Amino acid sequence: MLFTRINITAVCLALGVIMLGAFVRLSDAGLGCPDWPGCYGHITVPDAPHHIDAANQAFPERPLDSSKAWKEMVHRYFASALGLLILVMALLSLRRSDAARVPRILPWGLVILVIMQGLLGMWTVTLLLKPLVVTLHLLGGMATLLLLALCLLRQGRLAAGWRLLRRRGLRLAAGGAFVLLAGQVFLGAWTSANYAALACPDFPTCQAYWWPPTDYATAFTLWHGLPIDFEFGILDSVARATIHWTHRLGAIVIAVVMAALVLLLWRHGREDRRWRRLAGLLLAAVALQIGLGVSVVVLHLPLAVAVAHNGGAALLLLVVMLINYAAWNAQSHG
Image 1 (cartoon, rainbow, N blue to C red):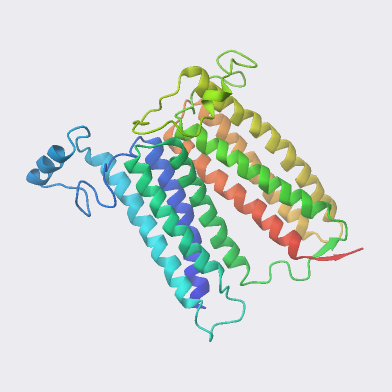
Image 2 (cartoon, rainbow, N blue to C red; image 1 turned 90 degrees about the vertical axis):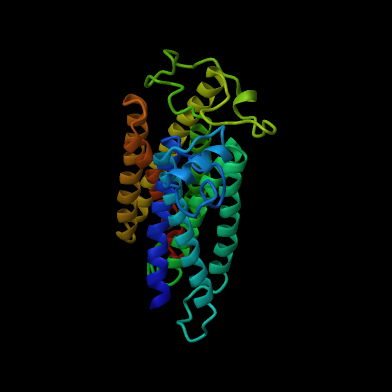
């Protein structure tokens, strides 16, 4: 079915856009184009000598860096393509000739979310990488990916015939794990937006402390006023270390919660072995993400590993959402 094929393409593209966004941010190209939606007033990066001169005159405080500008524009092109696919999905959902399982409301909710993402993308540039806006933009990208995946799940019969013990334990555990994981993704985004990824350059200690000095009031001040250029961050080392350390503590909590969820899934696998497959998938996703997170610190933020860490967060969210979908749609018994 056309709707399903477009949906699958959109899910893959959404994951690519998230990782492209991470690549742009981590390579310090977030302001590669200081205007929006174009780049120095063009739909592509200016390359003719007179266009480059005009661009530098228009933005003397931010001379054109073609390498950074192209990174930013490629991200915008892919994000625009994703928005177009989502609009096509919404229009196709109006066709009553399609199968009954095609969602009717969710695609239009995605259209609204994409519009909000476009605004956040604009404000990311015009507000000079304000951490709250950058963080919300990343969370919006994750939400877009999850809703696209949910839209795809609703067209199939993933949990049809799955058996689940009547107790609510798995459903509540899966829901709680998702909420906590969403909070951890926020902490990761906040760490990146405040340039705190290397605030603790050692592991497992932080600046040689097992519990470093902290300043939570400054570290988690969401709004610092206007106009402030946040490129490369404005927080002192203590505030940045506080953000990084909190993200590490969150990772410990998530690891414990996910381990408990794995054990619970394995237990339910006595009734239906498919739960054990989900347990294995979750364990692999958690192990991958922890390994990438440690590598980011130990290897001092290599770009490829840091981008993969963002992609790993998206994949872990998808796995936990899949577990929730299966748990809440399975048939209870026993």
